[in-house]
Length: 219
Image 1: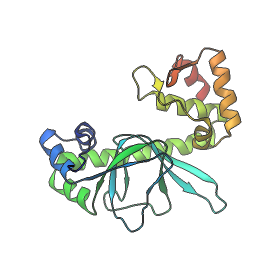
Image 2: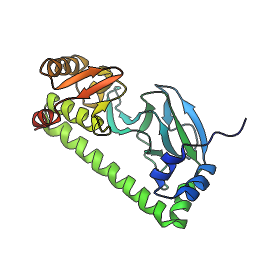
Image 3: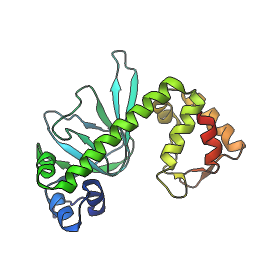
Image 4: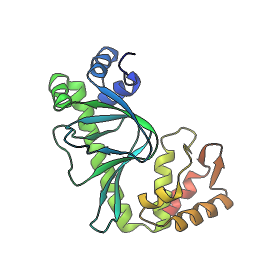
């Protein structure tokens, strides 16, 4: 059997490059699959940068007494690990679903940034987006009610789909951790929105029917 090759469309989009360079970059990667619940990073002494090519994951931090804070949600096209020569030793990445990643060895992404301006721009944009997302989540945690945080998170996830459908169906216990609330609060809130026609359970997911109404609940 040949070596697994990452999805070239994901590689092309993540690195901001054309087909030829995407194939070159894909050949530099080691691909692997993982299961839901797996710790994806850090892993021993591996000094890697990973591009998530399938599935969903999250970057989290744990307190001394086991309290968990979700720092950043991750999906296909997002990076984690030792990105651009720096990694956060206080955080770790966990898989929210079965998935796969393309792993690049120590210094590979930095060398690509030095050699190709399109890659440097793409990685810079990715890092900027990380900062914006984390800042937004900090503001939401400090200033929004639990209902507002749930609304903001569902709108964020639905925004990735043209039909505003979140797939797979959000697991309320995981959603509660993400928005720093309880499973009971999240379940009750979503049930109320279903009764009011704001959201709709469909096969395999949750559809945002009235996004403007949810936006009003955020603030």
